[in-house]
Length: 489
Figure 1 (cartoon, rainbow, N blue to C red):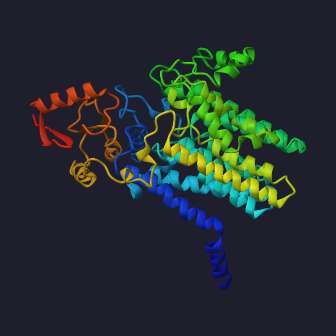
Figure 2 (cartoon, helix red, strand yellow):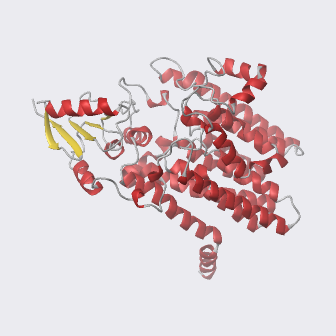
Figure 3 (spheres, rainbow, N blue to C red):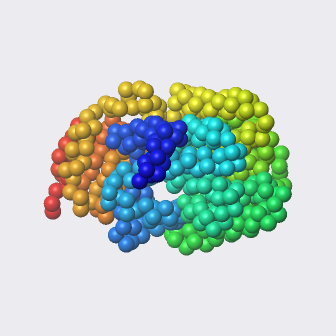
């Protein structure tokens, strides 16, 4: 008992424990407050929560939350995490995935700490590495954008790298598989990570060889999923997310373009190749943020840069402007690689004073980049989602308590069509649709004060007015929420 008490006291006093408490509260203040204030949406939190509801009831999800025609959700993204996490909805309800994501981020930082501590044997560097992870703009951007499984997969990566460093191969394989199943593109990323680790461990031929073998298996998994498994669930027998037309019509032609036209490929990393009206300087903002976060230090160990190559390609060759910048969850994969790589480089320096100065400079710059992201960005970012220091993060233009009361009055077995911000709160049921899809809905929930997505404002207002005039619907509430109940026939 005395030993247990001593261990407990040591854990409480450990700086990492205090980091977990402080950042856990900050992350919860962003993510959970957003959900309570209707700043989470049908895509992706609502659709994924509805999928978990189906999984715990022993059935596949049909994507009818956001698709007009039933199609297995695995045709859109091959995400097996939702099956694993689904029992938790019985405890945490519609907050489940947000809590999972917060816990994953905290555990990811612990993985960074362990990895750097093992490589450097210096606790001060390990603590600074964990702090840089927790302070990164990529983390806050992900928290402000609902839930996404690639965030969880990215948080598994430090533990995978740590297992490789320690020669714990069974653990490494298990963790690698955990990364694979998070999302189909995670396996391609892990291939590059394994190649980078093989370069790091090139003086240990057996370890490098095993890593290259795992890289091959990661590629095989990726090809199997996008080439066969996902198309087999698709109505169109095709993978739906090749959005890289600047490189070609498919993965084969994209690979050929990269190899045959290296100069043009490099140019695409910097230019507004789609000619978007607001696309100028969006890519440059990403480059500047990553550079200021410490990227130049990785050139002392280019193996870590290799790990980032698919992330740059995934973002900057994409057809959609939203992928290019520093918002949403699309930068999370930078975070663990840079946190580990930067402090792995710093650990090679003999001067402890230099280590501390450069380490704290990196942490400070990471924090400054996050504050810059919260304050002002070239590509639009909804500031109220993340500014926990501002009143508009906690308050809306209407009573959220009244909105929650109205939503809770809808029967749990009712079929509902709901505007995007309300759908996550109504997703634990057999059938729920994102408005304007109504299908066989018995209830409709709308609010003119919320964004009209996926409609334009004019079309949304027109549909709302038409429903209010429609004799088939009884008005339960009209302002600010429009709550309609179908009249019995």
